[in-house]
Length: 355
Image (cartoon, rainbow, N blue to C red; front, side, top):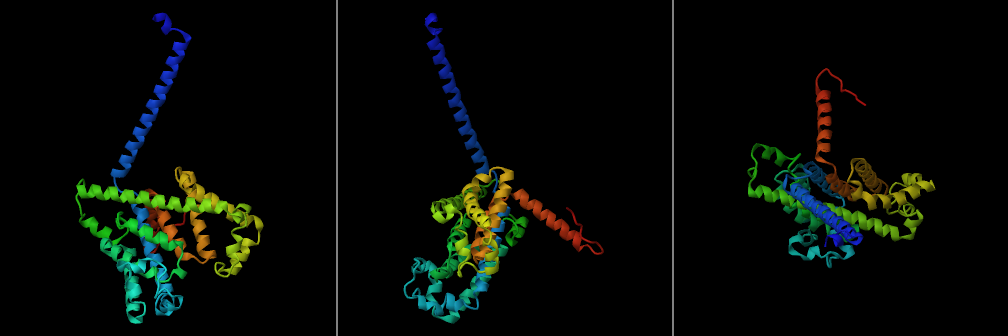
């Protein structure tokens, strides 16, 4: 038996077995470490509180801006004057057929009631933005917003879908934990004691909502990049030219001409948008690439908002992307701005200027 155990075949078999055992143990340890890390991440406090606070404020600002910008034409765009498109008699969207979201559709032909509910929605947008009684304001705002925004399908865009999906996920998160009136009140008296079951449940739901929101962003950017890559104009590098030279999207003809006058700039904008959207989430894994991705996506949406006349879509996406900026970065920005504000407000002193 000892002679058989020392044969080359037996030794090679032992070597292969040890390799397989080592690989198996490494895989199991890696899986165990990943599970332990996810458990710590999920249960050890709420994540991206400052980022979600920015999302809340920018969502409120987006809703407020859209409502105020359309106030003078509210009846023609969404109310009784929009009957020409047939949506009051037969809505394109399914939401007006659901009783919960049918309020604006029910009062569409009554200009007084429509205006009153329009003004109520403006007030709710302000309360949403400043985080006053957020848990009460959010469901009311959500129902009325969906009811309003689905009144005229012809004036909507994909930002409306993202806004609605994100609002739904905010039901399970805690966007009013920072930079809100609720946060000031909770600093004096917290709702649930530290370590209590409701506190743990709230933490888990908050972090899972954050995961779902991240997944939604991944779907939007990933599918957008893949869809663009299939098109011939995108593959050849001139797709950006077309929308900027149309009357509908080219809202700033001078800027559109300036951007599209140089061919390489058009190609950079076309291929760069595909590359940025396709690698966005992967680029968030390290700090240098995260900075490039966040500044890149910010510039991407600013260009869409300004050059293509889609400010509410751009603000919605920028608001959601705010969750990818870490809390310590938001704190550092806040402390820097606060320090400079306090220095500037001191009597007899000039604000310090630093590189």
